[in-house]
Length: 201
Length: 201
Image (cartoon, rainbow over all chains, first blue to last red; front, side):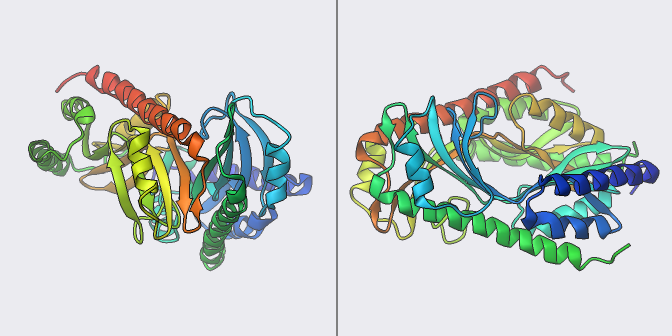
């Protein structure tokens, strides 16, 4: 297969991405759950990362759970949550639109050094539960691959008319949201095992 | 950019895919919402489709809404639904696991004739609301692109302990599920407008 990535440009981009990763750690921007994984990725011959999220639980005030504009994050945590954190929200406030409790899995952007490396990554992570992964951009400095775990679920808690869920079921919903977050972190751990076992440069 | 797709193989695959599409229409396998779009795609120089779903509303009996194995579809429609269709389900049956009402948008697999054509497709459909789209497979017969609309939401209706949603809120949930289905179909319509405006071969 023809190599259209310019390896010098790719290495330069990798250096910049690594410097940014290191400074983001200092500032506290990087989830601690994901630091070891990213360190291992930067040690491989073929990949680096530009952005990552290890998964999180949020309450979004929006008409639909996929919105980013006209959407307000009113609660956010990268760890498991307690039912009283949600209760204190829904029993004291009303949404402008709708309150969605969203538990989402990891999402990571990789930059591969070649198309072959990108396709190998997609094939390998699919078996680790990252099924909606694909090449999202091709440029001379690298092949950008988005890796998404399918572990995502929303729960509509409340709309402008009031509660949508049974108050007595709230603890079961929170338990499921936590299970989903932890399943994402398990898949992330598989990814770490995979990357930390690759040959180091 | 180097052309690694063998155009003869790609054309052969396209012929087979078109024959299958035509026979699927006869059998009734193809959503009528999507037929015109696919016809236009097959008339372009650079693309064909291998599989497609225009979006649907299902009730899934499963531990988690993304599961396919150990998951049972107990209700499925490609059009908007009525609240009594859901009531008659949850008031007469109990889930083995959990009942999730899932409203999902279009998902289509395209095969592009070149990497450039694949990347142009991804760039163009992103602005039409298909944001999680990417190349999922590269082979000598074509570049496979998965196009997914972000319009997806699940509602947990019931678990083994009973109802999770307020019975009085069920009609609001059904209304939102229908809005989401229709938003997916609007995005599909944008896709149709785009493909039917491309030069025909």
